[in-house]
Length: 353
Image 1: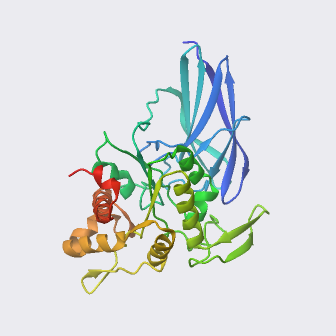
Image 2 (image 1 turned 90 degrees about the vertical axis):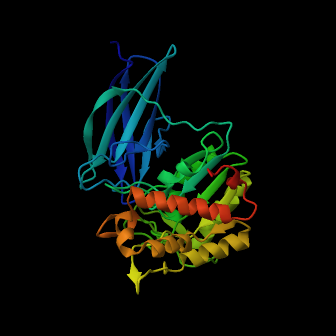
Image 3 (image 1 turned 180 degrees about the horizontal axis):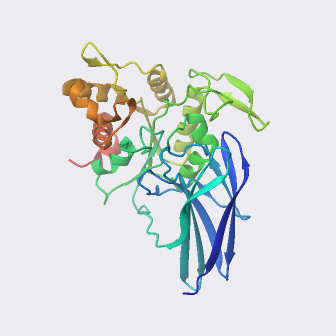
């Protein structure tokens, strides 16, 4: 077989605690070439939305590169495609990073057949943005966004889970994840927005995803590890940007409070999730966006089941945050129930009975 792609090489150009810049070197006989980078789940599957697209000089910028798994499974995949005379060839290389920041290839380069799950451009789309409580990020762990599509009629609505593990309102924007959602968005679409589990992190250390508490217009200049400066805002400020930019695209934003942790007191699951649910409700009311108190809906379901039956709804005995596939399915059903309770929401027309 005469391959269009003869060799693909990856090399780290720059890395810090927040991002990596990678060069994609391609040796090919002829044709046009492009490259995309995907996060890879623990089962080896890739999300249907790339986390980075190569610039003209074939460089990729990957946010939070240290989110690889602890059991040597790959965390990223670069897919390089070449096309000439209507013939397309794609090669994939899966990789992670070692402690020194070097690329560790976890699967040999091979020719693969790609069949991406493309949304129907004629239908409206429902986007999910958030963190790992909405997106798979571990063995026996799934997020409610992974299961939400089962609640809707696929012939009427695209359900697109664009949440990513470990992200906050701030880092989801800074890494370009939100800009890619905006590029996909069209009038008549919907966006479910849920952040808060990671937003109380450090401002300029580690993953640099923390932000200021509250809903005001406070700001703070911070020096980043790479020497640049960034203006960090409040949780409410970042939510307002999501709402305003969604409305500007002719789409409908819907804010959600956080999922509930597996913590119990006197036979009832604890509702307390800090101030993030309260702040999200405040922002939604002030900005004219719908709000679903998902925490209360889930807590009611957990209370009815009882602590013993709720335990397997989480991915492990030591993890009180992330759900198992069964827990993700229950939480997705709670999201659907919350959408039914939103007054005059057109999304109810797409829900399964």
